[in-house]
Image (cartoon, rainbow, N blue to C red; front, side, top):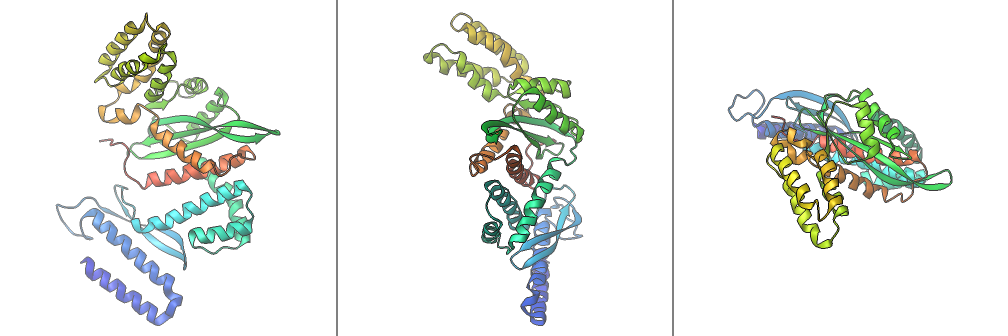
Length: 385
């Protein structure tokens, strides 16, 4: 069946080109693009349209219109949908990457003050799209509007939320200061990840975190079962004020690092790390508490500061035992956020020093927006079955 459809499509394309000439290239591409995406969906579902089969892996759910910029102009395509929302055609990925690359390129060059004429040349080489300097200026003017709309978009139910902060150098009041970049990631009921929000301010104090969390709540964030974060004092106070009933999981990786500061001798460090891992790798909360008590007793005399620290701090890293085994590995650390921060750092290196907070927020938003879009069309992060 698929072969007959392909033959029919190719015949139609050839007829179109013979009648209209090369002026019909974009129309021909639209036909091929749409047919390729339908064939991809058929392969994803495991059955042809209207076919009954035990091999079926899902159901079609119509089409969603989309315009893709290409070397031959704009293509109006119909993106096939599935009921489970897990399908996205590879045929469209190249076009999406161009859109994302263009947005990031504009953000980076906007930060660096590159002239619109140079931007036009670079975007043509990067994306294969010819645009003039006036179009670049208009795109730059619309960039902040697009990024702002994304930051202010409505949210919904997210079971798990990861929070972290990093710093970027920004010129402020004639001085170079470290600005805090706050980032929130969420995992929804389908187990998919999203970047929920990003904010840039002069400090990581409670007032910044409280404003950030309040904004997430005002945008509709609800149903949070667990926050995963490190021990930022401002964050702890803000979280208690805005989401007082939601438990908190302190990053176990950072707890391991923090513990080393209280080890009095180099020769003890490896054993301390192993004993702390025994706490975190316990099969259940009762065993973890038993291992923690054993840890504190073991180091009460040889490393009293370590014992006191562990007694107060380590219980903050055990909230994950209240959740099912299949989720614990993903919830025990902020490693997912660390990877996002690494990509932000890679991109922000082009700026070295941001001229103001707005330019920092512009580039960081473009980076995390790209990441979030890739996650939405990617695989499930946590199985919620």
